[in-house]
Structures are given as structure tokens and as C-alpha cells.
Image (cartoon, rainbow, N blue to C red; front, side):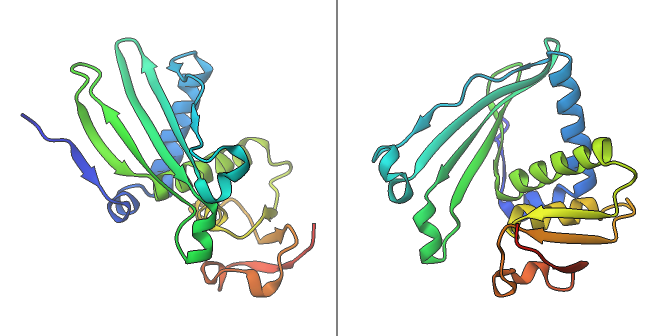
Length: 192
């Protein structure tokens, strides 16, 4: 019997470049536009209640199936978010994606989803830029300087889009800009 493929975050990062993420998200958006998806509402589990979510966290199940009836991919994303983790130098969120066989229902793959989620979100931003940016925009504003926007910069720069500058917004002080942004094409910071 075939065992599920297990991919840690480093393996996902090495396999999922920005071009591949862009194409996958674009395909999923086309499936969505054609009604070829099932995506129930995601349930939230808050063990200490919503008022104590910061320390008690929230756990979210995101089941979905994408594709036609004769060719679809079912799966689920399970994510834990505990904001207080940041104070201890730990990531705020941690999660997995599980992909099942559409034929047998058996688990085909289990993946950590830190990079997967960040590159998916960056791909959405990049697709939006490609479709909606007016007059070949040269300056891109980013709200915040976290890991998602770091991936977004990489995704936007994966091919020549004529971008000459990124502008960080959102009340960020220069001392708060993570080292992942050092050496990037930033002109400066602005308070939003």
C-alpha cells in the first residue's frame, strides 16, 4: 500500500516556486469562476473563547475540493493561530494541508503550510496586480513588512513587471522592518 507523501516546510519551499504558485492559483481561480469547487464554511474552534483567543488560540479547518466531477482534488487545511506565541519567539500560526485521493479517499499528501500559504497569498496579490494595475504601475504599496509581503515582493519580482519601487505603509518605523526586506527596492517608508 502506498504511503502518503510527507513534506516539511523546507521541502515545500524548494518545490513551490513563485511561478508554480501563480499557475496553480490561476487554475484554482478559473475552477472557482466555472463553479468547479466545493468550499464549505470553515469552522473555528476557540478553546478559551473568542475573548481569550490571543492566549488560547483558534483552530480552523478549511475543507475544499477543486476541479470537475471527473477530475478533482479534495483536501483540508488545518491551521492553529496563537498570537501570544510571537512574544516567545514562536510563529503565530502553524498548519498542515492534507490532500486525499479522489478515487480511494486515502491520504495522498500531508504538507506543512507556512510557505504554501504565504506563496498562495503572494500569488493572489500578483495575479491581482497583473489584472488590475492601472497603466503598468511602477510603484507598489505594501501594508506591513511581514512574511506575506516578503513573499509578495518575491512573487512580483519573479518576472519583469516594470516595478521600480515598493513603498511600505502602515505606520512602520524603520527599526521594525525585518531583515528579509534589507537590500530590496524600497525608496522609503510612509505612515498610512
